[in-house]
Each structure stands twice: as C-alpha cells, then as structure tokens.
Image (cartoon, rainbow, N blue to C red):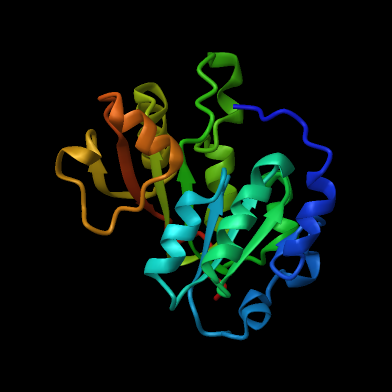
Length: 221
C-alpha cells in the first residue's frame, strides 16, 4: 500500500537522525557491531520494515541482538522511527534505502539473520525476478549471511510461498519450521507484523519458513 506524500515528513524525520539513516550508510559496511558498540552481538536485518511493528516488537524481545531495518518509503519508515523512539530501543537502526544497495551497506558474512515479512508477491510470471526469494536474491543473501545464517520468511500468499520453497531448495538451502498455517498453533515467540494481524483476523492462513544458508554462502565471518 502506498501512502500519500506528506511533505512535513522530510522535516520531522530529522528527529530520528541518531538511529534512522536517510542516506546510504556505506561506512557501516563490515562494522555494524562497532556502530552499536557491541561488536560480538548477532546482527539481524529486516528487509522492508513497513511501519515498524515487527522490528520494534522483535527488539523488545531480543535486547541482546543488533537490529537493522531497511525500508524504501520515507512515508512508511517515519512511523517505524516513531515506534523505535517511543519505546527507547538503542539496539535498532533504520535505513531508508532500496535493497538493491545491500552490498554497499553490509559486508560478506556480516549478517546472522534476514527477515522477509509479507514481501510483494509479484504474481505475474514475467515479474518473477522481482520476488525477494528469486534465486538471484538468494545468492546475494547467501553471500551477506554468515555460514549457517538464516532467512525467516512470512507471507499470506500461497503462490509466493510455493515458489519460495522451490527456489530455496534448488539453491541448496535447508528448510526448517515450514508452516502452512502459522496461527493454527502460533509459537510463543512469534512477533506479528501489521499485515499479519490484519490478514489473520480475516481468517487468512499465514505461511512461514526458516531457510538456512548453504555452506558455500557467507563463510567470511
């Protein structure tokens, strides 16, 4: 969903400048642990934070982890910034950016876990390469993840879920915790996104999996 342009956000977002980057933080690549002042803490990254319900909830449950959220839309990441500020979460950074630039912001083997929550399914076959679980993206993730690093994926789209499972397996990833209806027996540690709460209320099943990067992936940590 696209939000209407709100000119006041360009000024208001500056309030979060200590943890929300509106320009590519290329100087952070390979040194995110130092940025947080916790060089040995795991680094988890969410691709597409939306309004921040998930990353804020995840941060509250995992104060021991360094968290970075990426979101291309300023009119959306602003509200994520509000949540992080209101809840006082010093171990979170947000970056306004397109994931096309991931390799400029993270070093090979630097990330421990990636989250893909309700990504655009791009349902038309000719758009398959745009899906964030297309094998071209998986190859990039495998490089940025440490050996044994994981992708945690949730979606409401059955077609995207089936496609994703095939892509992961074909690329040599190990699938774990595969669920066709996450909320039928919802794990206590599940953190819901805005979309997840809305879709679940309508009776829509939520699909989830954890994919472990192949050994040939980010083996640089």
